[in-house]
Each structure stands twice: as structure tokens, then as C-alpha cells.
Image 1 (cartoon, one colour):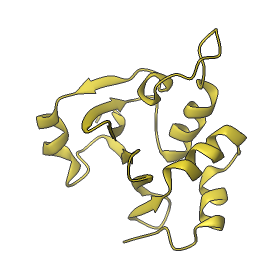
Image 2 (tube, helix red, strand yellow):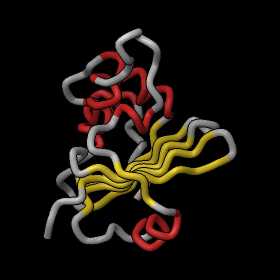
Image 3 (cartoon, helix red, strand yellow):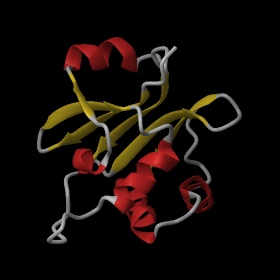
Image 4 (tube, helix red, strand yellow):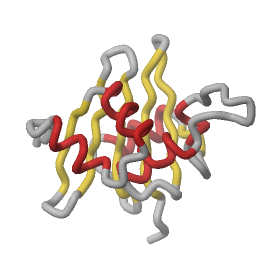
Length: 132
């Protein structure tokens, strides 16, 4: 099956927007792209979804049909809730699928640092981030 990468929901400003990108093969890629594409030529910060290459907009119906259980071809599901300062990650990091929750601001700090291994950095700081 063709790799669809990761799907993500961005909650903010009272609305949700849904995206997918085949370029994002996991949370580490997502964090790396946040860092690498953080500003435009004038150094103004770019919106999160514009930092991700090959991003496609998903309808809410498409999102709902695949978010409860990762649909075939997706590597991970991310939910970024800016107002609640949460990033939910559903990904297999080597021990089977699991859900993790990190503070959004901490993820952005790790992205800004350019950390080579965002998982290690965040799990060291938040060892109880694994929810299921």
C-alpha cells in the first residue's frame, strides 16, 4: 500500500483543520519540519501546516473516518491542540502502537533546538508521556 505518511489535526482559534503528508513518516519528521521550515524569506513565522512539505488538506469526514484507528498506509496520527497546550501522538516507536501526550510548547522548544532525536529529548523530560 502506498505510504500516506502522517495525518494531523490542528486545533486553534476555535476551529480544527485536518491535513496529511506523505513526507512525514513519524513524529520525529514532523518536529524536524517544524524546525527546518519555521520562517519565510523575511523570517516571519510560518503557520504549522505550512511548515510541512507535501501537505494536503483533509475534510473533517475523511479525518473522522480514519482517526479512531489508523487507516492503512498512515504511519502516525498527530493532534496539535494549541489552546490546550497539547500534542497527542499515536505512533509505533518500536514497541507497538501507543499514544503519547506532550506539551505543545515543549514540542516547539524541541523543534527550535533542532534536536537530533526529539523522541529521546521529550521522553527524558516527560517520562510519563506514554498514555496507552
